Amino acid sequence: MTHAKNPPAKRGISRRALQNNLNAYAFLLPTLILFCVFTVYPFFNAFYVSMTNWDGFTQAKFIGLNNFTRLMGDAKVWKYLGNNLQFGVFTVFFKVFLGFMIALFLNEKFRGVAFFRCVFFVPVMMSFVAIGMLWKWIYTPSSGLINSILFKLGMMNPSKPIAWLGDAKLAMYCIIVVDIWRWTGYHVVIFLAGLQTIPNELYEAAIVDGANDRQQLRYITLPQMYSITLTNMVFCMTGAVSVFDLIYTMTGGGPYNATKSIAIYVYEIAFGSSNKFGYATAINILLFFIILVITTFMIRWMNRVKANTNS
Image 1 (tube, one colour):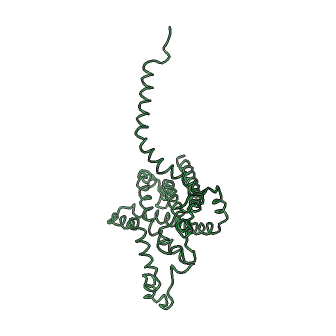
Image 2: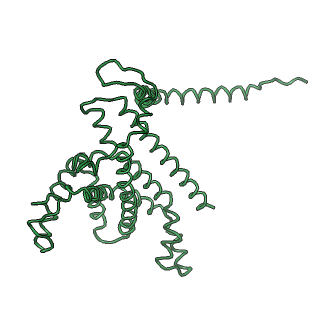
Image 3: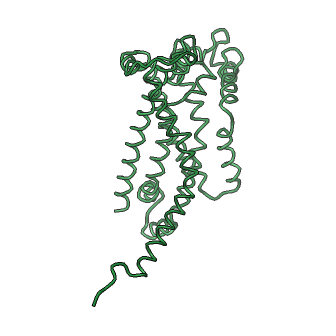
């Protein structure tokens, strides 16, 4: 007795699966085309530009890896990356810490909680230019809000005001304060969303076992929030590496380059008097790999913590 190699039922299933796959790819095709046009092509084109000597107007001259060789010996690149590191260490810690603490407060049920949630998110909706101009006035030595308050309290001599943004030792910390004020509400929302996904049954069981508030925070809330915390840290770190708007609006990188970030340096190289688009693009490629390494490390750490939490 002979058997058919491909029974009709199986051939029908295979054809149906193939048809479903084709339909799925057909729906994905427009998005794939847009992704290639606006992401893949610019990405590889940037690599080509980084290996040229190009001013944006004349014909690009291919010079191989010369821009990357120059990049490794450019002391300014590493100095400004150090500024980014200083900016990132403080902003990551305080935005994550304050965001989590405020989210814990706003996760409670009390009168006016919706109002406070909106208040903390208001700075996130403001433009960087408006924020920069507002805080630039607040930090003004002669008539700024901070110095005026210190004058009234007798804590400062009006003839010797503090030049907050004009002092190379203070300027970066002043900008860090503004960035924390600007973005903490954003991280509060993420933390708050994570807190509201924790099952109440866990807290009820802990209360039955006699756990106090501190123990509930340590053994329930914090482990359940590991992934959310690491996600917020990734957002903070990538933002710190590429910070531009706030610094450019408030100090332009001064005084004496004390607040100049690597993104401002790239802007000056590309659109300054030299118009070295190739070299500026090479620095951007370096930034891309720095962000890639940070993100990859944080994602692996996140997955490891999540696996340990689930086990």
